[in-house]
Length: 400
Image (cartoon, rainbow, N blue to C red; front, side, top):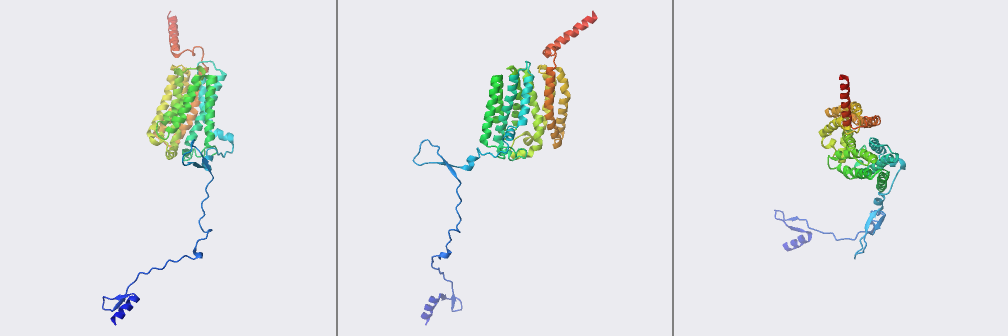
């Protein structure tokens, strides 16, 4: 009887209980047999995810010799088109924007001033070559600058609408434009002026595009490099007229060098956020105190250069030294206000006055140079000696 119950328990999945009850149930592992899915359960081809269409590609064969396995570089059309595709609305206006025409005209005017301040008769062909050649070289430098800084210009509100940022100019077109204008400017200076002026122009192009532009993202000294770039154009004009550089030419270049600091510091102060976001290591970002100190320091330097150094080097007359005093004194005053209270209002005043300051200084220089009489054309040391001798002679004649 017991054996029959055990057989039945084994068939029913029951085991003998250890409790007072006779039997209890336990779970048994059961596996369903694998079955083939029905046709209606299979996914249809239309329901399957479609494969992404592969963009049109071009295969560039760059190898001179074929190896055992052919290796091809695949470049999509969209990357190739970025180098030559343009979406310009007005080509002439975009050219002017690419070369920063207003800035280039301003730079060319400093070269013209340098030519007119030279102690030689004015010749039309070298003067035109100095002005046009400087404009073309400035256009080439500005084009290279925009070409190199396009990714960073897109991050700044002041520059995010430039032609290379909004793709109105292609990089290849901008590079070609920079090369043509730069080489043409050097050729004009070399042929119609002299090799010294052409060499200075080529050097300035290299410093602006090859030193100043990349240095802006690595070192605070970029402002000094940019000031050198601003000081070379008057040397180009002076050397185009004379073929040499004398102390008067270097005094003129130093005036332009010092002017860059209050001008650029006043401009950059209100753009500190943009410059920082774009990664530029300019003074207003890395050292705000240095930015304010250099502004007032070079404003004082301009006062001394115009009133002392310019007459001593025979660049101008003593009349210019007196006439330029109020112009430079007001620049010192604005720089001092910017140093004591570096806010948006004072920095803006300093920047806009710097735009007026330099044309006034160049105008006063031109007036003093072309207002000279025969005595004023002598060197200042000779004028002082002759004046002293005349005074002594007058005293002797009165006492005799």
